[in-house]
Every structure is written in structure tokens, then in C-alpha cells.
Amino acid sequence: MKNTDIVGLIPAAGLGSRLDPIPCSKELFPVGLGPHPEHGEAHPKVAAQYLLEHMQRAGASQAYMILRKGKWDIPAYFGDGSHVGLPLAYLVMRHPYGTPFTLDQAYDFVQGKQVMFGFPDILFEPADAFLQLLQRQESTQADVVLGAFPVARPHKWDMVDLSKSGQVTAIYPKPEQSALRYGWAIACWGPSFTQFMHQHLQKVISEINPSVTDFEISMGKVLQAGIREGLSVQSVCFDKGTCLDIGTPEDLRQVLRTSFC
Image (cartoon, rainbow, N blue to C red):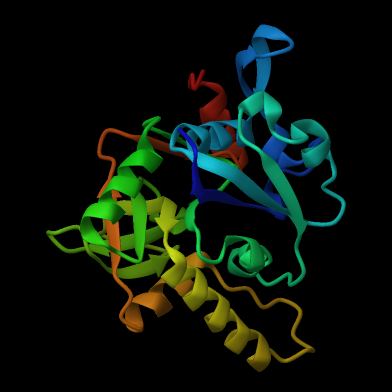
């Protein structure tokens, strides 16, 4: 059953430069086959559909996808979300300073809501991962719960330092080397973190020198700022789960050899 207080939030404003040249937005790259309500059982299944299906299964009432100008193939493909069973709305990115700013474009629509967040070019299992995050948040009353996966290449992930109780004590964005085992890939959060991120980014934007064009802030840095300010960040570790980023050629090759259907 869908919960009107739960929404999905998806950043789809990336340039996809690591995969250039490709004939479509990376979120629409076919990485499997699956059923389609109009076209049969073995229809091409694009990368972002997996995330949308995860959110739909976890009870999201709708999802917001934030785009960069020019990525109109995404709404042209997904439309209103009917074929994935999840109503979709689209917004256009304003500030090109990284994922948090992209997400904040939806602030007026998601404030006061429970948010499920994921990257549309990251494929993960288990299928009930978001449900487990929501349950963890309900039981701990945390501001944020991160889905953490064992990763072999820490320089590609935000690595998380965890206490024995699952509390996230620190986040290290894409370290060159790390003895930590888990990187985070998905999250759920309540209104307190939406508000914190909005106010934090307003402060950041006021301090950016307009002449600087290569500034970027990551979600990991915003989460770490929240931890420093006393927000409670919990985790669910998916030791038997999988997590693959199709945004790089090497991982895309691995995904195409792995069945996610």
C-alpha cells in the first residue's frame, strides 16, 4: 500500500561523462529484460527502472526526478510513471554544485515528508532494502538511515564508520584507501534532515565565490555535517546484498554480466 507521506527523490542531473559517448542518458541505458504492461514479458529494462521499482515496493506514493536541461529523454521514456506503477514528477536543476543542490530543488515538494533516496545509476539488492531502512528508522527514530554495502573499491564510494549499534559515526567520501568495509548507496530520511540540508546549502551558496565554476559538494559531506551538528544517522548493513554503479565502463561491464531481471 502506498503511503502519501513517503516520496522518492532521485537525482538525474549528471552529465554521464564517464560513459561518453552513449546514445542516451545513462539512466536509460538498458541493463536487463523485464515485463512491461504494454509490450510483454521480455522488454528492455533501463537502469533507473530498478530504483523506481524498489521505491514502489516500499510504499512510495510518488517520486521526484530532478533533471539537467537537455535530458528530456528521461521524461519522454518514463512519462507519468504508469508502467512502473509509481507516479513521477520532474524538476529541473538550478545550481550545478552537486547532488545535494540537485535534491534541494524539490525542497518545497518534499518538506514534511518521509524521503527514500537512491542514485538512478546504481543497482542494488535485496529487493526489500528500502523497507528495511524504513523499519530501522521507525525503531530508532533516527534522522537518517543509510543502506550500507560491502565494497571492494573504497575510492569510488562514501565509506561509513559504524558503531556496534549501527550508528554512523563518520563518513569519508571516496578515500584513496580505507580499512572500512561498508560504503553507503541508498538512504531514507525524515523532515529533520530535509530541513537541515536545505538550510546548510543556503549557507554554502551564500559563501560560494561567483567566479568559482568547479565547486561541488557531495551528499557524504552534507551527511557528515549533519552528524557534526548532532543529527542521528543509523545504518542497515546488507552483508549479502549487491551494489553496482553503472556510471563507469568497468562496472557497466560487470552489470551486463550479472542478472538483475
